[in-house]
Each structure stands twice: as structure tokens, then as C-alpha cells.
Image (tube, rainbow, N blue to C red; front, side, top):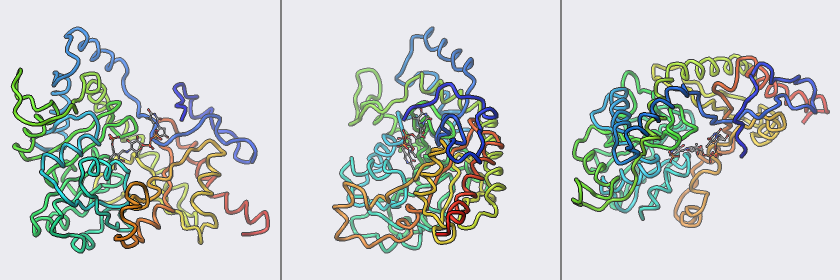
Length: 403
Ligand code: T4K
């Protein structure tokens, strides 16, 4: 996809929705456009890095980024990793997972691929259709003598039912990792995500709430696990020329940490923009039949990085894919995360066809969910325009003689 690196100011971008053949926006609105940062601060940090001549291998910026994240989420140990997928591989290996690991079928493919890459077997579980997270009531039925772990995903930054997941895991003596790729700055009640399970994994990919171009972070309260992870991300080196374990190269560079620190400094304004946009979408879509906006107005904190719709085709009059296509013709590039559900994609589809029952909620949601653009690329007038595109689609069909 071509990334618009020089966007037109939002206010001059919206065109008339009335003109059916003219796209409503002159330039594409994208899901996952990087959130703004202070470029001068980034340049200063990079200058410091050039002056020091230290570009990677646990340099001062990486250490500062780790400390900042640890303070923010309230855990003792944070280990910066090259990306969240590599972080999941390291965590699963450092925790000694073998055999089968239970994962939700409704997540980004990286969650399962990281396990599969290690020779583990992801066992797909259905999700709760309201939270989009692992349905904890189904986990126990999937546990076998080969199960060694559960990976919960805090989808869209909404915390899993951590209490039940950890209670089930504790009863069976198995490990818990949380894929918190979406959940930086989010909480479960007054506890920040980062401190649950054996460890939690954040993604700082360019598209995330806080980003370091590419990047990941493992947060844990377990000091032994943290030291194993530090060794493993750096070839097993415990000091100069001293190798004490197996390892790989999953280090974060200083330039990535410079971006991560700079992005963290923008967190308050990024959150304010995301929250403003979420409220504008909520107002604009309030009365649209068959279109439900995922609401995060609970005691839990959310970063509002994702604007998630569920489309009921019977009530809306159009299927999710038709709406996505309609929006695309107006340069609103919504995304169908996560389609298809993981038990239906290679290599899992062929392996699981025989022994996995259908996972109705994951399947249904992956045909209904649509993620809309947000962030600083849009103002509230743009969001009103996107909402009218969504609201007006069914009436176009009615004008043309009904469904
Ligand atoms: N677990 C979960 C639950 C995840 O969602 C992810 C990643 C991971 C684990 C793994 O984390 P990492 O190993 O990546 O740290 C994108 C992201 O690449 C991926 O990181 C993210 N989840 C996923 C939900 O979204 P794609 O395949 O949609 O990428 P792509 O290239 O289509 O870009 C997404 C959108 O962002 C487009 O609208 C374009 C826009 N974009 C993208 C980039 C890279 C920009 O505007 N600027 C950019 O620089 O996966």
C-alpha cells in the first residue's frame, strides 16, 4: 500500500458526499497511520546516539525505554525486543512451553505463527462475542495432558478475563502469556495491562498507539524469567565472550528506542485525539441500524487506537464487505481485522480441519468486523463525513428500489 507521507490538512480534504461519483476524500484515510511525534526530539535523540557511537546491544536509549515502560505499566522488568512476534517466540521458549498452547482464533496471525514457528501446536479457542477475547468458559475443555500454556489476547486493548484465565491455568499448572500488542496504556480496572500472567507482550509497530517503527516489549514481574529473556535476545551472552545459553538476535536498536521514547512523550495528545475521534464516531453512528461501535466506556482504560464496528447484514441491509468496498470508493480504507479466523488460514486450516469443531463466534465476527481509520489524519468533520457514508448506504439501496 502507498503511504501518504504528505497529507492534505483534514479540513480541506473532505469533498461533498452528495456527489456519488466523487470520492468523499481526496487522499486515502488509512487505519494504522502512525501517530504524530515531535520530530525535533527524535532528531536530538538520534544526534546523541551518533555522538555516542552506540547503535545497538542494550544501549542507553533501550535501557531508558525499558525503564519508562516499566514505570508506566507498574512492573519490575521490561525487556525491549525487535518486534512483538519475536517477543512471543522468546517468551514461549523462555517459559519452556511444549506441545499444545491454547490461543483465540480471532487475533492477528502473528499470535499463532510465533508458537507454530517454535514447533508448538496452537489450539484454537472460541471468543466471547461481546469482548472479542478468549471465552474463559471454553478454555478448560481444550486442556489436554499436552497443554502447557494459554495465550490470551487483549483484543483492541480490552483486557481479557484475566482472573478466570489465571485461575484455570493455576489449577492445571500451565503458563499464561498475554498478547498485549494492542493494549499499551490500557488497564483492567485500576491495574495497568503489563502485570498479568507470567508475562505480557506489547507491540510498538508503526501502526500501534505507541510505536518505535518496529518493536516489542516483554513485561513481567518474574526476575528469573526476565534474566533468561535478556540472555536469549542476545545470543545467550552473559558478558563479553561469555555464552551461557542458547539465544537468538531479537535486540531492539537505539534508533528504535529513540522513536519509542519520543512516541511515549506524545502519549497524552495521542490519547486525546483518539478519544475525541471515538466520541465523534459514537455520536455519528448512534442511530444507524445494524452498525454497532465497540464501546470502551467501562472502568477499564482504553487507548482508542482502534475504532471497531460490527455490521449485522440483516439489520443494516448490506454485508460488511459491501460497506468496506463502498467506503474504499470514497478513499476511506477500512480494514477487515481479523479475517479469516486463524483456524481457517494456512497452515492451520489443513491441520485442524479434522479435529477442530467450528468456532462460531470467531467465524461470525470475522465476517462482521470492520476497523475504521482514526488518529490525527482526521478531524471531527471528517468523521461526520465517514459516518454519513455509512448511514447513507442503505438509503441508496432503498432509493434504487429496495434490497
Ligand atoms: N499480536 C497482535 C494481536 C497484533 O495485532 C500484532 C500486530 C502482533 C501480535 C504482532 O506485532 P508485531 O510483530 O508487528 O510487533 C498490521 C501491522 O503490521 C501489525 O503489526 C498489526 N498487528 C496488525 C493488526 O496490523 P497489516 O498486515 O494490516 O499491515 P499493513 O502493511 O497492511 O498496514 C496496516 C495499515 O497501516 C495500512 O492501512 C497502512 C498503515 N500504515 C502501515 C505502516 C507500516 C501506515 O500508514 N504507515 C506505516 O508505516 O498488519
